[in-house]
Image 1 (tube, rainbow, N blue to C red):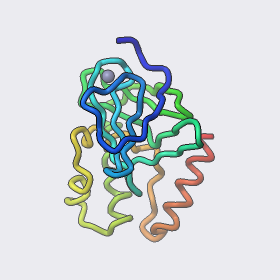
Image 2 (image 1 turned 30 degrees about the horizontal axis):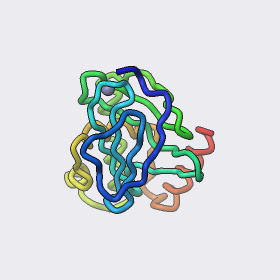
Image 3 (image 1 turned 180 degrees about the vertical axis):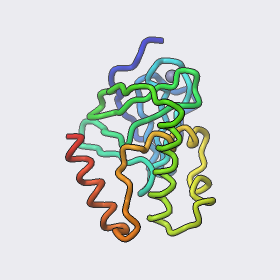
Image 4 (image 1 turned 120 degrees about the horizontal axis):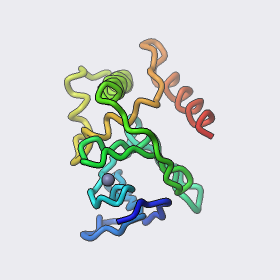
Length: 163
Ligand SMILES: [Zn+2]
């Protein structure tokens, strides 16, 4: 299968059994997005939506998806953003970078939910969530005192920077 260059979207109630390449299946009901890996390998990428997980921007025509999708557990190790439906490829990450991304992600979750870190991974456990944890390193680390407001501000800065 060739690489996907852009993603259309479908808002669905049920996740279809057979997924098409190049479609983001968005389930508001389950708060998740499922798509086939953009590299064409055919693996299913499941991404939960949430304050500390993935965010969708739907501008009426296209979808922007934050942060990047890192399919570290697939042989392809694909890493990409979806910005206004376009797939933007990122470099493959080293294992150290993935670990760093996971640690940061856990830290952000702790700040949001004030839960012991041991629980952070379990909160959104999904099929490939473990891969995806590694993909959130672009979200700026939150200082312990800044709390949710600081986090929201940083996200806003992040989006502006990303343009
Ligand atoms: Zn792939």
